[in-house]
Length: 368
Image 1 (cartoon, rainbow, N blue to C red):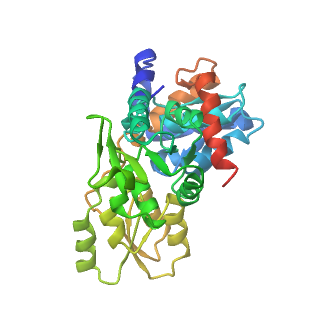
Image 2: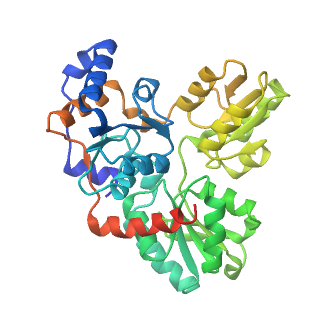
């Protein structure tokens, strides 16, 4: 079930009271719930969350790391996931049946994940089978709905992260002649290119027109990229890079591989969120960096590295709007309803979907 389907069936509204409380009152109430619940509560926070939320996180990380950490909390009865919908789904898949996962605000979704729904994917698969027979293995970025993960698991494929995408695409090519990469075309393109697949051997599947976009002979296609993207990372441009080069000639540029191919090609480095964080952590004092990733994280990196000159690659970039839905009022409300035994924002993946999705996740995890 994707974000929009969830909202059709459950529309909890936060009481106005929480908007009326002061920042300090909200902070105090969150801290009190955490103290009273102790290890019965686990609060993972994604790197892109606001500072007012990440302050209370029991762990920071990317979506898969946080889902795995959630599954390791033997005492935790409640996982209040400060991230977006697909992340909470993954946590629900990996945690025990007696553990419950909650999302502070159900509007916290991911536009990229929702660019590939199950109906579109099944139609695409049927048409691609007509073109290529049984020569395709599906892979999906973990930034996808549980339903898409289940589809991939059902058809022998696996999930990938931005950290292990090269390893998983290499594995996929050992299984089949071609891959279908969902839902982010840029990560798929950048990773396949790094592995030596020429750009002219990559096609794009457009789920809206239900067409395969490709110039050349269809037999040459090795990688089929779903026409999806991250609305944050796609906004970093070649012009942004050129301006940094002009204004800061000695500055290094590091970007996320969800950026467009032409941006990655002219940057100094590209890698996962963790790679970006570790690169800056290990950079010498006085070094200069322009970072092409989500703004909440960039601001946090700047604050934590006063000894370095760090800027956003795009100075006009806004934080991820859907990730930003989770704020201190919603976190407070969610925690208090969980503690009081009247939670509203439960994320529960149907068992039939979870079983197949876990297959896709496990095929990746055993190779991680």
